[in-house]
Length: 119
Image (cartoon, rainbow, N blue to C red; front, side):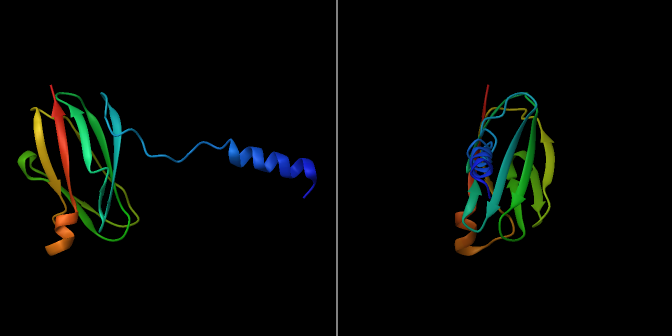
């Protein structure tokens, strides 16, 4: 590769946008991405606002999982290689536990998180 070509290639790589996940706090109509794995959910805490629509995108890092919020009657299967999407508008404020309903034992203890809905 020519010297100028190498410099251009490096500039493209260095200047490339990062592939960081979307923000963890959803604003009205925002998208929140949650990745499930045997090590747990990433992120493990979601902060939402009561009455504001959020688009939830679930994915799996290593197999079939589930995203369940019992108190809010949400249960979504997560299949490897395919995103599971759903829209959600929290109707009440509070702190709600979420978990994987597929795992059991020690794995189930790892796959937990918290959904916090503020006024």
